[in-house]
Image (cartoon, rainbow, N blue to C red; front, side, top):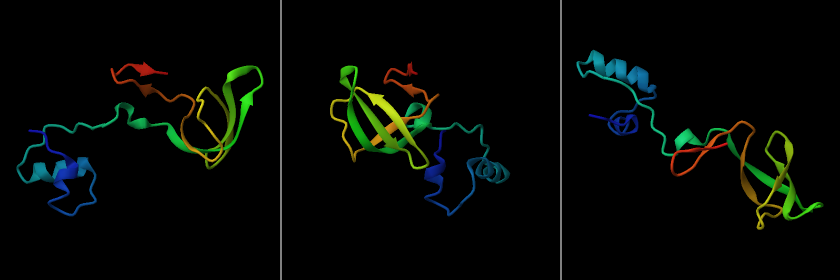
Length: 110
């Protein structure tokens, strides 16, 4: 049987991590066979952060591209994008260098 750690916390107030909860349940005689992490989105969107577009101009050498400056909180980066609707003041998702995004079929879009 699979039981959610989140579901267990509905029945007792605990700040314990899943590993410690498993140890306690085993000590009580309820054998925990294993712990399986759950990701509602494959990769958990690790490496994706929210930034704010602070400047947006047309690309000098391409009609369909925009050159933006995006505030990531700790620094400002220049990003060239093809989104026709990007504009100053928008909040945007930014995949940092090295981030892997997965498609709906589970294949990596690096």
